Length: 333
View 1: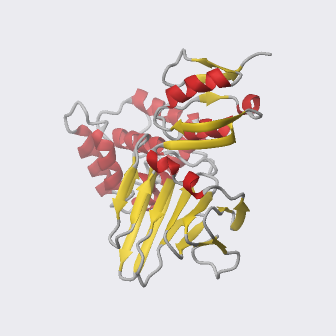
View 2: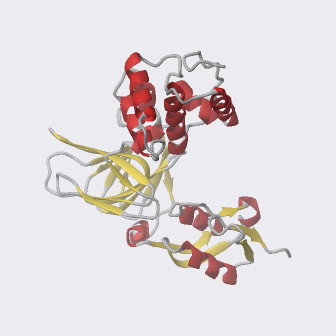
View 3: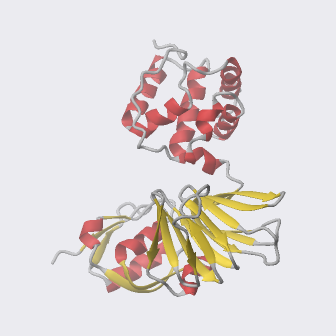
């Protein structure tokens, strides 16, 4: 039987970023294998789990594997997962992650976007909106499944959006400019209100009122920056700021009230937006639906009724065999 301290020979694909769920599962595996409860079957199951997807192996590799745990980490894991409790594999995972972050090997964890999201200063769960009054009097609103860190004080007014959508209503009369940063760049308020969206590929900035200066990286020299006015928006990715078609400013903040406006919007984009607000995704074939467009104002937190209306207006059908994750397909001609 493989000993928990034996080196892990894992080939990790660095392009496969682990999700929050994968990081939590990896931490649970490491904790269990460090305990006295793990048997030969557990080790075999662990190896199979690592081989199921490159992100699984990458999460383990970034945590340092089982062979590189310090004595403090090993003892912490053993205590957490040998303590009698019917819920020890649920609530303990967060403690395990915290314990690993506090020790030397935690550096690997801290580099994972999924871990940064889990320990963010502010988070909005899926299907909910969170409004936060910041220390400078500004208001930050987070959309469904969004997370942000806040850094204010000592001449700083910085928010780092880790994932999802954010509306910033910036308080005036401050000496320091208000900044929203992402991995793709920074949006600096020259006035009051703007939105920022961060997904896996890029950052989207839209101005609601006044002006915002957008730069493709936080530490740049100002080259490539753009100044935006109400309704204007840009995409930040790969060190480049790309201007997008302007929109009605109110449309950029409709999600704050739980609405999705669409005026000839591609159906696949509407479905993407609805999925941001669902625990279980709507499944669909993008290629089959790519030429369909829809118009209307849709409730983001009642996607089932949206789907029912779309079926009546579009040449699509819904397979609701799995009620949690319905599948949409095109009607046969």
